[in-house]
Amino acid sequence: MTETAKTATLSFDGKSFELPMHSPTAGPDVIDIRKLYADAGVFTYDPGFTSTASCDSTITYIDGGAGVLLHRGYPIDQLAAKSHYLEVCYLLLYGELPTAAQLEDFELRVTRHTMIHEQMHNFFRGFRRDAHPMATMVGVVGAMSAFYHDSTDISDPWQREVASIRLVAKMPTIAAMAYKYSIGQPFVYPRNDLDYAANFLHMCFSVPAEKYEVNPILSRAMDRIFTLHADHEQNASTSTVRLASSSGANPFACIAAGIACLWGPAHGGANQACLEMLKEIGSVERIPEFIARAKDKDDPFRLMGFGHRVYKNFDPRAKVMKQSADEVLDLLGIEDNPILQVAKELEKQALEDPYFAEKKLFPNVDFYSGIILEAMGFPTSMFTPIFALSRTVGWISQWKEMIGDPQMKIGRPRQLYLGETERDYVDVEDR
Ligand code: CMC
Image (tube, rainbow, N blue to C red; front, side, top):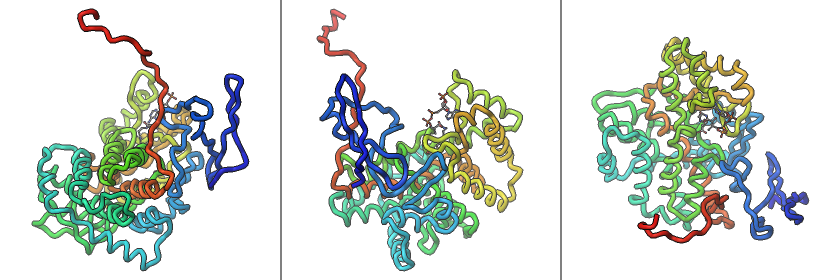
């Protein structure tokens, strides 16, 4: 394994403990504390996991200081420019770029699974029309475990493979159906002659009454959004998927847990929150007021789409996304859109402000993705579902890696208990 000759020494109460260390292929060394409690009788304390590696992984590497994001070693900007989403899915799932024949076979397998069980249509209809599409997705993806029993046995590698393909293939169909249901339009069946991104646009924007041509520039931009969100190592939703699956739960239940976690505004919900914030700001003149609020410690307001736990110089995904936003807005002829004006000016003013510079707060991927999605015609409520469908392959790749690891253990963090010590129960009349 990766264990080195180096060790770390932990000393307290006059005792010393030698801790083994690991050298990763990239990134900082890691102190192995797995035996710490057994040997020294203490826990470590790290809420938010800012200094804790929860697993070892070979899938994605991030150097937050240098703004580097690699999938299986390949830089995200090269993948965004030269590859496409399904090829990146293959790379994440199987570890290497596919040959032409492998890619063709993979695309065929995904395409064959794009439809969902017809009875699931009834399941959608049980939701209120005004349900957030993320609420619908959490429910429907969880319900896949009730429809696809032949791919829930996690001890069978073939069933794991089938579940993986099913999830990648069906997620756009489920997200598009959640959208169609919310606007009262008929569900649109997938079209397997279209590529992955074009098919998603078709399922979202076509209606049976009219012919719909997918604009290739928009489908390319859609594909790039999927690619840029495909995986991001051990973020909150991925860690949720890993923790849920560590108990042996089926993959559909685990991915539903990941979707639920992604929904929060500090994570995947930031793209919706960011666009809503830009709309609330409304005009360039009001930007200083919002920047002042973001800096005010007594105001919980934060600039949505700014900051990242890991990236402390720039988010490499944001760079590509910004370029894509320019292309899409140019194509659609909406460069003078007021939201875009606010976004551009907000970015400029925040980057010039010492508060944001000192705290290393830069626009993240969600700052620009919402602008593109809005220009394409998606309502803000669809932004996070689109993130969820893109990230599904990352969740599954990490899930497969974990299940395939013979050292897998149930995840069970410890705690620093600060509550009452043992005390006797007091009868209600004596309290
Ligand atoms: N606006 C204003 N101040 C901020 C912001 C912000 N967006 N983000 C962080 N800060 C401040 C924060 O108040 C804190 O200040 P202090 O040290 O004085 O207490 C300091 O910067 C560090 O913040 P933190 O919350 O300790 O940092 P974190 O690593 O725990 O949080 C974050 C990272 C992404 C949750 C946070 O930057 C944030 O809430 N950003 C806005 C939401 C957002 O855009 N999220 C999308 C992230 S990218 C996509 C994804 O991963 O899903």
